[in-house]
Image (cartoon, rainbow, N blue to C red; front, side, top):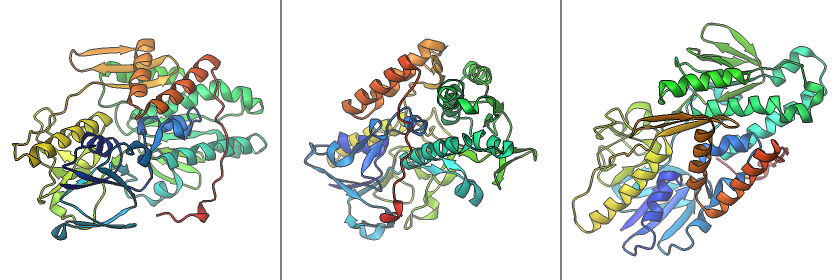
Length: 423
C-alpha cells in the first residue's frame, strides 16, 4: 500500500512512525521544510530562551531507521484525485491513499495590513524574524532621542488571548522587568508598554474560569495591559486601531489571533467545512473522496460524541489521530472493520511566567496553579519533544535560564534570503 502524507507536524510524523518498518506500506512524507519542529515552544525561540535546534529535528535523520519511510522536500501544488496523483514543487507522486496533515495557517481575517506588517507566530521562520526585529529595535531605541519614536519601538501589542498570546506577554513582561534592565540601562523609565488584546471576554477561552481569572490577575501584576472584548481593526502607519477606534502607537504588532485551514487545488468545495478545514468522517476520510484522509488541525471531525462541533486544534488531537489512522490502515490492509476516532482529553495548561502557570485536568476535574502547574508544564513540554537530543538541549537552556534568570541567545542573525529560492 502506497501512502503519501502531506505535512510533517504532530499528525504526519506520528502516522509515519506508527507505520514505520511495516513492509506492507510504502510511506512518503512531504513537507515544505526539511525538519519537524515543536510549535508550542516557538515563542521561546522568538524571545531568545531556546535555540531553533532545541525544538526541531531533520526529517531524514528522524526516519533513517525506517526502511519503508521516505522524505520529499516540496510544496503541494495540486491534487489529481482521478489519477491518484499529487503535483509538488519538486515533482509528482502517485498514491493508493493520500493523507493531509498540513496543520493550519495564520488567519489574518482578510487584512493585507495584518499580513504584511504584523509579526506572525506560526513557524520557526516567524520566531526568528520576530527575535531579530525586536532585538534590532532595542538597539535602535538605545540611541534614539525622539520620545514618541522611542515609545513606538518599546511598545509591544499582542493580538490573541490564547496560550501563545499569554505566554508571550508574560515572557516579555519578565524580560522587561529583569534581563533588559541589566543590558539596556539607558532605557529604564523611557516608556513602552506591553498590551495583550483579545476579542473574547476572557483569556484562555477553553480553560476553566479559575485558570482564566488567575492568568488575567498574574499578567496584570507583571505590568501587562490586558484588554478583553477588544478586537484589532487595523494596523497602519505604526498605529494599531482597535474596534472602539482607540489607537496604540507601536512598531510591534504580534499576531496570535487565530488560525484557518488551507484550500487545496483539486479538492472539491463540498469537502470543506468551517474555517476552511477538511470535513472528515469518523475514520478521518475526507468527505466526497474515496481514498483521501485528513488528520490534525486541517480536519474538522464532528462524529465524536464528546466533540460534536469539532476537536480543538491542539497537539494531542493531532498525535492521537495520527496513531489511530495508522492502526486503521493496518486494519484496512487486513480487510478488517475500521475503528472510529475518539479523542481522549488529557487536559490543558499554559505558562504565565517564572513559577507561574495554570493547568486543568478533565478526569477527575482538577485545577491547579503556581509552582506545581509550572513544573507540570515544563515536564509535559519536555517529554513531548521528538528526540532525546531535543529534550537535553531544551532542559539545559531552561536550567541556565532558571538559575541565572538570564539566557545568552540574544544574537541578531541576518541570513541572505535573496540567495535562495523559496515559495
